[in-house]
Image 1 (tube, rainbow, N blue to C red):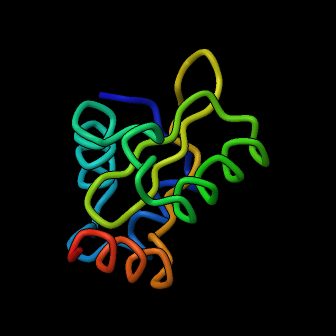
Image 2 (spheres, rainbow, N blue to C red):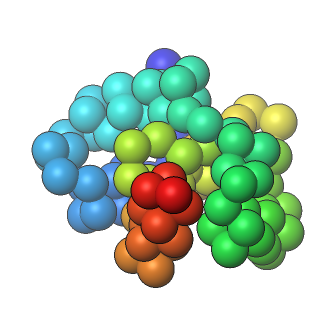
Length: 101
């Protein structure tokens, strides 16, 4: 199982539907780490890509993954999950518009 901080457990429970226990949060973090898409996969969405790069620069993280509709941020050599953010609606709209073209 991946290492996850107390903060990320609480944010997972708060922000992700279906996550009610610490085990659920760890299991989802493991899935996000192995199956989540990296920042480079979002080059065709310029505003969202820029947002992810800015997140990476702000937090000085070692890894950002996007899994389902959430952004997972890992930090440090131990690759500890530090927080989970939902994808903002304005970027979801951008992705839908570009994909529908």
